[in-house]
Length: 178
Length: 87
Image 1 (cartoon, one colour):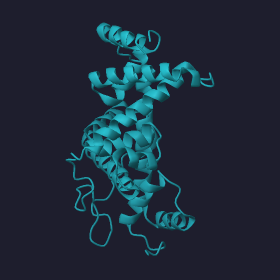
Image 2 (cartoon, helix red, strand yellow):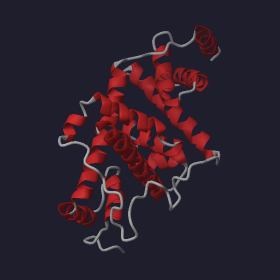
Image 3 (cartoon, one colour):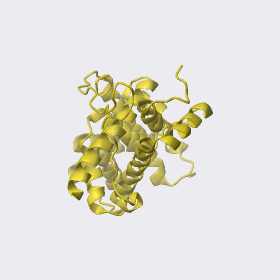
């Protein structure tokens, strides 16, 4: 507890952004760890083991939360604003050139800040899907389960999350550059 | 069934995203490749999505490197300790 409490708490807080829930999750994690400590065979470090328990607790929590059908976004609707194609399926708003050397963008703080901001501004569900996919490296199968949606809808959400990110970055970045 | 040699940009933008999450069948992958050879806009789109993926990972790595930890409040720490003792 003394050794990993702060670490687990920070980890949970970072992902859940609610201190009370994060505290509960730490308690649940340590309780579960204590109960099953015989299963811990020292294959991984204690820290990794506790982190993996915590990750499961976080996913369980999110799953329960999203089972309640209060989904206020329109991310799965056909006329969603991320669609930028004409009726023949061609680009209506063409993706703009961001830089003559895109690799350099990775090193530019102002660019990273825009990406950060756009990520924070994503609606809840696409944000969650993208976080699970890109940061936790979860498969679409897991994401569908967590969000309680079909596989197809899962791909649609990820696609639209990326499209929203791209549009947001483009708008802010080009404005800054000019 | 959509002819995979004649994907529209709209289909391709979806497939590019999907290909980042799952391995698509060879036919589809070839169809995408074929489209990208002729369409610089979709190619740009693909590169931008890949860049966004890289940037998100980079931001996360930097956050963790900062190793900014939030300590557990003392009362909560005691509460959890007590809870664990009773198990």
